[in-house]
Length: 140
Image 1 (cartoon, rainbow, N blue to C red):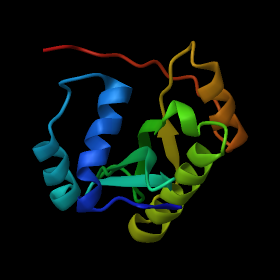
Image 2: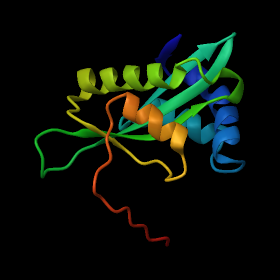
Image 3: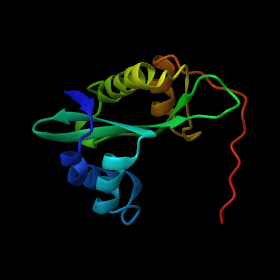
Image 4: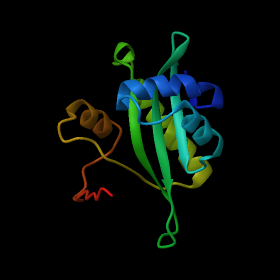
């Protein structure tokens, strides 16, 4: 089943994030706080076999420069044992629908690694296409 995350998912989300992003990037308390108070993020989860098998995070981006806001898919993760079941596709589609309905999001963007060929294939299959943009970063 694919659904929006709730506070009771926090511990499992923390464990999944430890697998995905490594240890020490966040805390259980921070995830709980985000699920309760962060209205600019939509978190969708997939349940399989009595537990969470993955998650998708979308940031809602707004600017006075544009009439509509857009969604940025920032995280997509499915556990190794639950891959190849179309969970990522279903979670992304579910998140897109929530964002369109609740926030009037009119388009989505995402970043993925140049070497992440399976991810690129997934995103293309869902209608995403490459843009001629350059990501720049400054670490403080």
